[in-house]
Structures are given as structure tokens and as C-alpha cells.
Image (cartoon, rainbow, N blue to C red; front, side, top):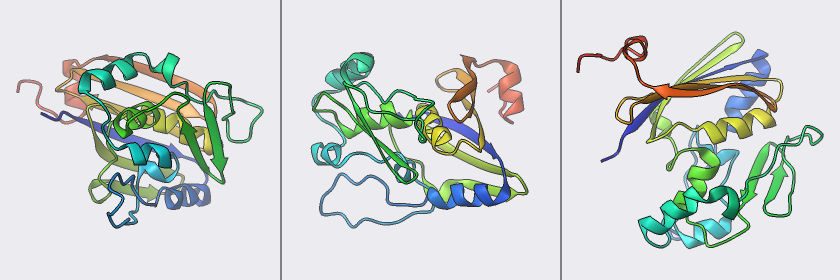
Length: 217
């Protein structure tokens, strides 16, 4: 059974920069079927944090669920992500264990040890196992604030937020999330390379009420 995490992303900055950020999120979702027709959608995590071609060739799953769980558990040793570097314009840098590449406002992190499945790659670099459903995202841009309300499977897209925040250092990102089925809620606030808030806690009655959920269900 899939548990859904409810997310509310607020991005603040100059109106023109917010428009550019929103336009940059359009693209083609990761496609693991080589014969499938690639479609373009208005919002996809894959636009600025794309799944590498070699991972797409391996497929969404590789090996048993136990093997993938083990890869995620040991991800810091097996698949080091790009480290933040305040001297690099993207906030990313190459390192000996993993490769971070940047093309315009697009960053791509290639795991150093393979094979890694699309499932593992997306959890590591988006924070969630699947892409968002573009047609189910509520978008509101007004003045110097952009609000995105959407759901993701099992967990919030915290890794994706950290990466795009590094790519857009003039914007302020605040992600609030709640997953009642998993029993957790939290907040991630980032600007550029600075993580201002990163906390997660057990869901309480106040959380449920703030999100408009019935605490007695």
C-alpha cells in the first residue's frame, strides 16, 4: 500500500526570478521503457535533477527489494552524492567517489558504484521514490511568493529541494510536509547552500489540525 506525503513548498524571491524557476521545472519525466514516447510536462523533479541515462537503462528496479533496501541503508558509502561547495556557482562539485555535472541550471549526480536502480537513484537524489504528478500540483504565483502544493509517495522531496536551492541561490525555499500514515511531519528551509531549518518529528494533534486533517480519525 502506498502512503502519500503531503507537501507545501513556498519559494520567495523576485517575481521575475520565480517565473524563471517555475519555467525551468518543465521537462520530460524519467522514462524506463526505451520504447515509450517521451512527453513533456509542466512540473517534474527530473527537469533539474535528471536520472542519468545509465540508470534509465538499468530500469526502475534492479535486484530484489532486500538488495535495494541494503543499497539505500549504505548509500553514503556506496553512492556518495555531490558535496556542496560554496566556491562553485552551482553549489555542487566533483569528488573522487561520485560525479556532479552541471548544464545550465541542471545538475546531475551519477552514482560511483553500480548497478543502481532508478528507485534507489530517485530516493537518493529526489528524496522520494517517484516523480510528482504534474497535473495534480496546485500552483499559485503572486508577487514575490510561489506556492506549490503536491503529494509524493512515502517521503518528501527534501533532496530535490536542497539541490534546486543551490541552483537558485537568490530564492528562499521552505518545504513543509506531513505523512500521517508514516506518522511524521517536518520542515526544510534552505537558501542557496545554507540549510536554515531541517527538522522532522512524530505527527501530533496540532500538526493534523494545521493541515486540515481530522485528528480523531
